Length: 146
Length: 388
Image (cartoon, rainbow over all chains, first blue to last red; front, side, top):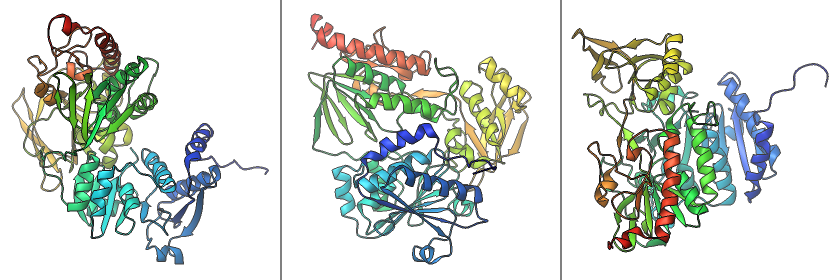
């Protein structure tokens, strides 16, 4: 309470209202698991932990959980990098390896919305084609914040 | 798309978004030097650029990078009736949509690539009235958000053919639109150097987009080829990211605005004048460039990690040509003061019409074309002339 600076928030005040409005559409709860390990990408760890915590404060539909890389949960989901985010890992296999900063923030927020609402931009013909898939696919998209 | 696919098939598809600078070992393993870079089951299927939805699904199913020039996948069945089909979601197309809808005309904006066109890839815009300094993507997002309050914008939908007789039929890779007018806002594409190594090393050190790929070259050395506003703006942007950049220009004088040149000078960014790139060198990634000084005739090899190219644009006029729209000698669409082409009910706006290629020009032309379409549909001048 006395002394020390208040920690700066990741989500600025003027953006909070916009996000609250965006999240009004959320239906299903979305558990978001954040894994971090001190000494590995520390600034990105701090950013990611703070971001997910603050998103959880904006809507009861986002359920953050914080773990250490190396704990039982990280072993269960084969997480070895810091930071790593798993979106609803009991239902889906959607992972962010690294922090969703800069331009990737938009896609990250849309991922949360799609997961909660259960609706994507796939057309009916896209869905038909994916229905025919018989073998596993591990898709990795490499991005940068700009 | 990766996430959407993983949501659709959670039993078989996993999606991982990897931030390359925090995971350099993974980026090196897959030879990532441009983004977005897509790997499926350990195999690279996409280097830079944005796939249409159909192309991405195709890559998931076949694990193959689509062959250059492969025909887009056409879908039968979907047909929609609108008043105006707008081809291209850059500033011109988006403005045309706003004005068209506000005139009471039902519009749809069809964009085969990225919403926002070139502006989306411009690091900084300082000459759009009302905004002293804004990131290109932010400006375009504002325009797209505004337009989407009025109309539908379909990304990843390419117009393949326009039949302008009677009812206009615009066929796309998803279906057909029966409409009363078309506004072409297809813009322009990057001009290439046409030197050895340029195509082979595209996405592996050769880039046309500093905003997309500059981040990879922090602490590294690159050249920026060009002498206009775009090249200088992008060189300044790379410098601000901590990239060691040298501007290479074929003439003695730069064409860029004096304020930009001043910034270049103040930041001590080296400029090689009267210099042309003859070859881009490297085995799997860019390792250097061969540059000739056209005044002295001397050629030297400069070791660099990347070669950014910003030497202007060519009109994206394939659709205009197929439609029978008249082009000038440089391939730009000819229009009158109301943005009308020679084909009744077909209009063109923005960079595809040549002239002053600025965001503000495209915006103005988008509004003019939409209002002209409104007037013409109410008072068809071509019928007065006895045309169909």
